[in-house]
Length: 63
Image (cartoon, rainbow, N blue to C red; front, side, top):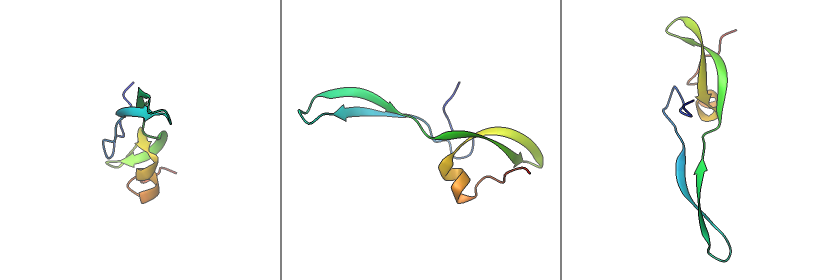
């Protein structure tokens, strides 16, 4: 299951958690994806979309 936004292409990013003692462990930050019924090319389609796209109005929700 791909964790990629179908609108903007946002996907997981990797990096380090850094503790107060400066210990480093690898971590992954996933985008906040939601399943939304949206209008896409005139048809209703279930899409995985990040919350930023929903908030900005890049997705037209189906009624």
